[in-house]
Image (cartoon, rainbow, N blue to C red; front, side):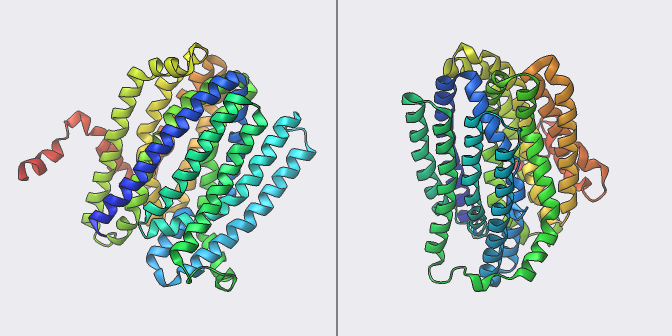
Length: 437
């Protein structure tokens, strides 16, 4: 693949993510200050609940669609149409059942919270159109996607800020989040039709036999996606039930500032994944590329963690006020999970490239179980800081340690270990390259 095209694509992805990151940071600051820790915690609690069903409605098709389009470019219409049909149908069924559960059970008792969850569910139906993003990924066309997302996200950032400043009611803020998700889904549909022009998807391209084949490949990813989101969001749910909404609010501020940096790893890996697939037959070159990407991801995460550990608490007090001072201590722990999250972004794509999908479930399952157990013991003792420590432990176990236990995945574990040892060897294996240049 053309190096210039890859760099351009990555630049657009990273540029958009930086702008969106700044916009989201502004929204987080304004919402956290306007709502207070308790109401802001409740907002994040509702978002966390809906996030738990997202992997089910995605059907684990995300990276599989990219792989299929790269490997079978002549079948693009069938791949897109069938995937879209599967995700739309699943979204309607799952979200209808979830809304019914909200309305007719005592899981959520307050009417405002019930309404908020229903609004978020309705907005998430439109995430079925997010599958179209993988056509742009496969063709390394980030520019048009980033423009669309930039316009919508920045517009809704302004709307959320205005709501927070003039009428900070939880239901209005939740409605803004829901409409944003829905419009991004509609935006994917619009730009895909525009990019493909007349040769777009249609009902006649839907192939249910092929759909069953896709689901046969993706069920491991569906389960691993559920496990992944469990150990990403379960901490906020457990904090709400074991402590209170105030603890969720202070923890959410820290986790948002920590997780907002994950875009770098995802942007880099998403862009390079199609290129990695094309050089997979050249095992030596393929392994070298894997190692270089992993090194970049690890070093970036390490530098980030060090800087945030030093300056994070000061930054939080300046932005959010003394009410959120405890968030600074939580952030100093939570940011170190990025070391394993960054490398995991590469490992997840590698598992797909190597058709080792079941290990995605196994490793994420390990992380989910360990995170729940660690949270159960650490939250009563240390509240939000305990949840942050549990996050580090679970990511270490799921995104590094678990890969050592199978011969099939040990290769990526070795790649990660070499990256982790890089600072201790002062980057010695790159000295030769530098001398040659």
